[in-house]
Every structure is written in C-alpha cells, then in structure tokens.
Length: 208
Image (cartoon, rainbow, N blue to C red; front, top):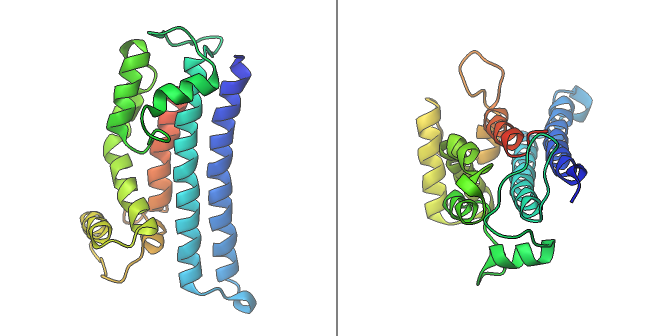
C-alpha cells in the first residue's frame, strides 16, 4: 500500500477538524449580526455537532491508520514493524474486531492491547495515546454527555466541568462548555484545547 494512503488518512482527519471549526466560526459570526441574531442554544449546538464530528473523525483516523499499517503501508522515513505478515483491509478489520461487530476505537486500553499484539513495541500507537489519555478520557465524558441521556453520563460531565471552571452552572450544556476559554484571559476555547491533543497524537501516529 502506497504512502499516499497514509497521507490521505491524515489529510482527511485534518479536513474534518477544519470543517468543524469553520462551522463554529460561521455560526458565531452570524450570532453577532443584529439582523440575523441566532439563539445561543443554536450556537451551543454547533459546538456539540463539531465536537462529535471531530471525535468520530479521530476514531476513523485510528482505524484507518491501524489497518493501513497492518496491510504493510509505510512512509518514506517510517514504517512500523509487524508481528504478523501483512494482510489486506478486510482481513485486518476482521482480526481487529474479534468477536465484536467492530473494534471500539474510543477505548484506549483496547487500542493499547491491539497495538502491542500486532506492532513491535506497540509503535506508533502506544506512546502518542499514552500522552493524551487523560485528555481523551475527558473528551469521552463530553461526548457521552452529548449523545447519552443517562444520569451517569451527566454526573461525569458535571464533575469534569466543576474541575475545569469556577463558575459552573447546573444547566450548562456541553456546547456552552466547549465554547468557553480554557484558561482565564486566553482566547483558546475548550474545544480547541481538546482537539489540539488529537492533532498532536495524529502527527506522531502518521508522521507525514
């Protein structure tokens, strides 16, 4: 498999991020126009939508890069060493899924296990994922609060927000939280803060 496939996987993830942030930018611009005032709940919804799209894009990036490396893909300056003979895409996906319908790429522990099974030293997945594990687990709490209605998901999200900001309100939705500056006096929002860790990890997994 040519290096171009890995570059395509990396570019697709970058494009997903850019589209998400562009969507947020446009909605924020419209919300500030007097003639086209957009309700804040719609602005919050745009943050949640962008976040979910990027989260799913990250899972797709992990899956596609994992399968591509298993199929023998590499870059001019990098190619991971495998414990097994290279396989085609369908075979790789079947191996990774095991007894499930599909692997859950949001479970970092499971990705660690798979990486150590098929790649020497778990490279290039283990170290980049270890470096973002705390932040990614926080992202999962936000993701779960958006897509699940369970009280447990809500409690975990509330606990995260209380730990991050001083002026937490019980009616604060994930979208509002994602649009808040991650540090007082700075412009970087929480969605930008969290996505930056995914970008850093992806650049190490597929170092184009």
